[in-house]
Image (cartoon, rainbow, N blue to C red; front, side, top):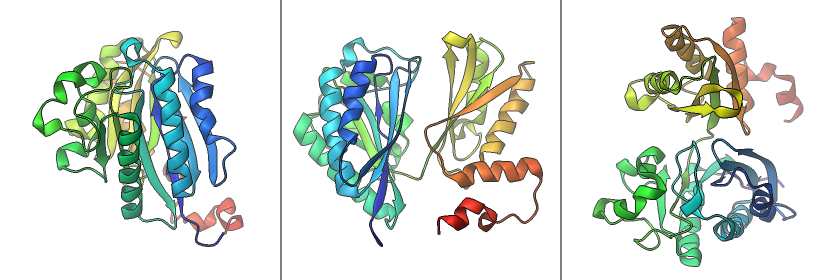
Length: 300
């Protein structure tokens, strides 16, 4: 093995309800050399599935292209409803450098994927985060604003010309964003209320866009089946904005409404360090080093 490059890819597909369709979409990541399917998690409220794969860059890219083809076949955005903002059947395809790979190489890979996907499927593709072609495209929320329904008008504006593919929305597949980024932690905090207004206000106060935490994106979401709401976050750089900081800030904001924090969840995978930082904070451990983690020493 030695210097094999390893990339992680965490595509989000706009189907979280139909198990048969989800299995079809995930299938191209199975039984392939140099590609390992680590995790896939569907959410019926969000109506999306988040897949985590790692492997050799070209192999991951090719499996991703194949999965995109399946998603375009089985998903029709004209009938898609979900709590989570979305703009396409394959909503977003992030590439994350994991081992022996630079961010620049991950950016290159995302551009190769964008070019091939746009040519093969005739879907408009936007580059975001580290791959963005202009500063106003770095933030995915900016690109996705207006969602699938609003894209038909938006894409006609010169400043929203896609980076690859046609300047018209694919009628059933919408549009896709791809790019390279840091490992992201999807961290949700559940509130003991069903009042979505409160979740929205708290989300607004903790997210960077409105003056909150630098590496935090947040929205309020209803979990209808549980009769509660949550602040759903993407922590875009856990090394700079720790999970415990977001958790504590939400507790502070929730106190104003007399609402308890009743739990949290982590979606998909996360670097061990992100949890250890938080444990170290709550235990008040002094001078802790990652070298003290037993598993870390075994894996060397």
